[in-house]
Image (tube, rainbow, N blue to C red; front, side, top):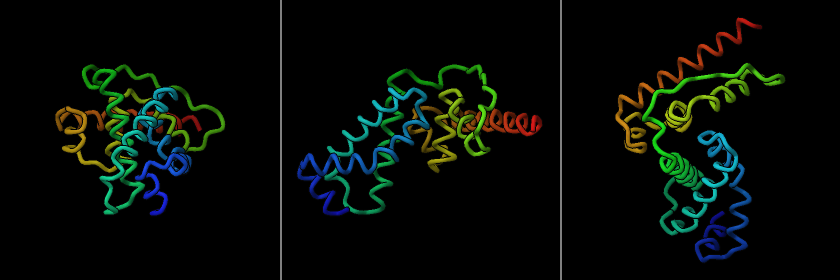
Amino acid sequence: MEQLLEACRKGNRKAQKELYQRMAPVLMGICRRYLNRREEAEEALGNAFLKIFTKLSDYKGNGSFEGWMKKITVRACLDFLRARNSPFAQEWEVEVPDQPGGLDEAEYLAFLIQALPVGYRTVFNLYAIEGYKHHEIADMLGISEGTSKSQLSKARKILQEQVTQERKKS
């Protein structure tokens, strides 16, 4: 991997393509957690890779390279959301669809998370999946810590209600 990174740092297009092909599926998964539409996720992924390649000289080998790339990708998604206007400026009406056929419980939970309003989903992903603290989320999103906590609480409540309803159906 170090040879690949060094070639990328030197601007080797073949190495950059190889790194992209290796990491794009993983990073696209992150983008899809934050952005519902595939086109938006692809745009955020492209922005993330642009930042990765331009900031590659900043990566000094401290910590996981994949983790470094994931952080850049999360920030690219947040930048995309911010550019579309703040998802936290309004209350959301939540309409959660019924469980599509053929999904197991984990897949259904992922489906429910994706169906959350963008503000709830963003905070839930940052807190529960990425592991950020509320003060970090507040800084990243330009919201108060209380708003972050409130968005997470509402997301959890919706998810719990939907899972409970689905279990009652079974």
